[in-house]
Image 1 (cartoon, one colour):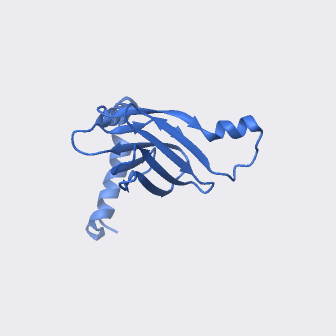
Image 2 (cartoon, rainbow, N blue to C red):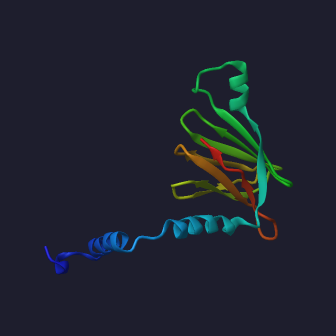
Length: 152
């Protein structure tokens, strides 16, 4: 097979492999790029985790992981209440109730954006295991609210 036989995607894949092998990105540069990505939400208010039902189950001596997990994140102007089912499905509500877009950010996965209705309710489907954070955008002139990162 010659280069002329390759389609564009195959050619780009081969070129990428050669570039990675002959001129790899230094780890310090990759780390800097990952760190700079967090600056895109620097204007967001942080909502800290104030309640996690996992702690209640551990204190009560419950061993089963088959129950849902409730989490509450508290920010200066917004509370984000979240429930994770045993299967990993995420549903939540914004308090006070309001429409917003909620970006579900997961390390190593593409973000997914869902809409909170006027009552503040939203559902994001099943999430993969790993770190997750929610970024709530409430509209023009109002700061976004980002939850702390939490391991699922």
